[in-house]
Image 1 (spheres, rainbow, N blue to C red):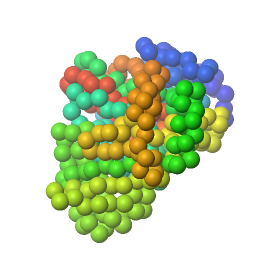
Image 2: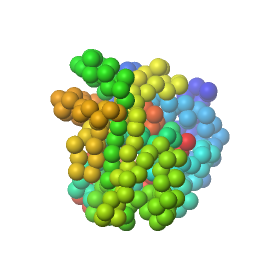
Image 3: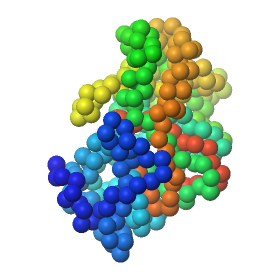
Length: 324
């Protein structure tokens, strides 16, 4: 991997409000055009294409990299930036209502902007999940609407320190989740994606086959909806190239005790409420966020970061691409 200074002729290191240093790493690392006259998308994509391994290494090292000050204006130019890396695409599977925009680009969660979207690793419960989540701000909100993120290993460190016995027990037993999805999409809910859209079919038999391929079972509900059952799933995971850090790779806070979902130990034993509540507090304590600016492109290491969405005033338009 080329040393970071190799790109000083195109990128300059910047800063942003909310930036933190975690375990010696700046999060997010902010890169701006060294020459403001060369902030066009063609030049940016060419620079990224020229040394994509270098940039990929920055994402792994810092977990979050923010490109700011470049003329990325719409879904087409955002797609050009994403495709410069030649990363394989991965189709989103999950409860969030989303709309395809252009090639590899989709809307982010279309649920009401007044709702807080809980912290999560993208597609954490699936057999296959993205390595990278790339976000683009086309319309920054007038207030709120940040996409906060959390270094996952920090959550594990604190939970192990405060609940060593509970972590060990849950790790041994594994986790089980359930989630109830409507038949058709419901854009009034941040978890309103219907099973027909999620599995790309209205055929229940085919949906069952596709669900099993993703590592889940389905129970059909009388109202036309579907109850998905996923398990066993791990509490934490260690990924190659991330300093042997133990990531808090679960979604117990987001699914435990909710109207549409549940999270228990794999054998059905309830999770201690104190454990879940303290986990939620720790995640918030460790969170990092910046204010979106028009044209921002943020690269998140999905293996290393949880992310969410703060409530905001409209309008807000953030697009996303998920990559292997």
